[in-house]
Length: 265
Image (cartoon, rainbow, N blue to C red; front, side):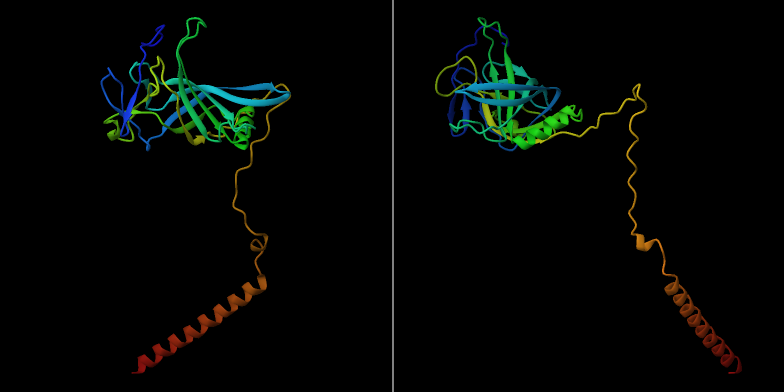
């Protein structure tokens, strides 16, 4: 049904934690234990400046192509499915009206095609993180050290009844569902939290240019030895050797005496 001009208007009904859609087969419920993992590549950095009532707000955004790991997303009742979706990471900037997103908030949603705007169906994942973490990600991106990253989220998505028994190593299908308040031709967004955001500091390789070879490689780590341990105390060492010699001499004399006594017995 993806890409059709108009979807059927549906409405969800929830009772005792179980969601049903009139006229559709199946039941759905939440799974609070699983995490939706997405790998994000093809990164780009955008800067947005907005002015409201004379106050300018500057917001950086890291945008990339997300690939859902193992799982997939689907629209309950309509059937649309996806595994690839754009991912946007933003700083959680406090708003004076208190309407801003809190740090580590995440949203997954679906925007249906609009013939008047000539737009197509679009899925999306957006997350808001603390400014200091955003600064680290931007610095790593600009340094060429972050070709990709992973984001894990726990959202109020739905799974079909029975899928909660799927082993952890296997994927499940997460569902966006129709609204409960009224009939609609598109689903409600799912909200939740970012449980993990990780990336590897993959250092960019230096390529020698016309000005000469690149910088020397970093020295290999070595075991640090205290300077006092590199120069032995010769006086103490000599005294210890003398004591050892005297001990050996005394032990030798005692053994020889015992042998002689035993000979005459």
